[in-house]
Image (cartoon, rainbow over all chains, first blue to last red; front, side, top):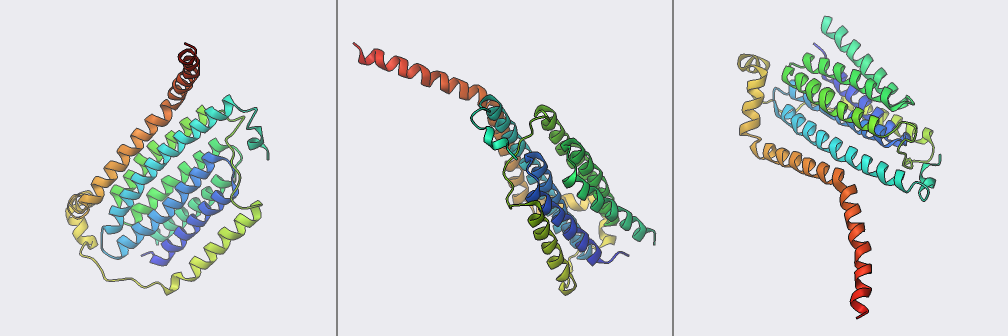
Length: 100
Length: 190
């Protein structure tokens, strides 16, 4: 039997990898991916707790988190494409946005 | 013993592919690393007796969301990536913040104590099968959140459509705004 603290430690590490990626990367799409990593860390915590507490509440919440993650990915990537279009069309004016 | 080896393998792969996913230069490689991570996450869900969630993890996350990311990456050309300013100055400050957060949260884990147990023991779930147990709970106790989740998906669908149509709409608005100043002097002239 695997103790609960192992799952929680792994979830914390995964969440903090996501935080690190969100804070350090500047590519918008990799930032969205980091948010997915954070959500997955929370999901792992919820499923582990739901298993160890003999309840399916955490797993039901995991479903809703997956739903929200899908919606967030769709909207966020739509915004990214719109941003890309507008920058490509007027990239002479906003070329300072691309500097390092 | 096998379970612990399996957990160790999955944890190692999750941490390694997670770190690779946020440190690789090419965004396509990042997405593929996250794909590996999601598969091992599904393996961890299997060790927690959540086989339906493992299937959902692979179908929805790996099958739908990551494919969406890959499509966007191929639409947005890789040469000129979308960059925004980082939230913290310098990469090392971000790493230190994340490491401090991890150390702080892991330090408080031993102080955690389980609350009162629910009624869905492993035997009860095995008797009903996991999918049925989850469905019963989802469609009775969590009916209102379920409907709200459906509404959120609808909002995401409409939002995606609006965002995808914006360029044509924006062009039309610019066209009308160009036409209006042209029409106004005509009205003023006579």
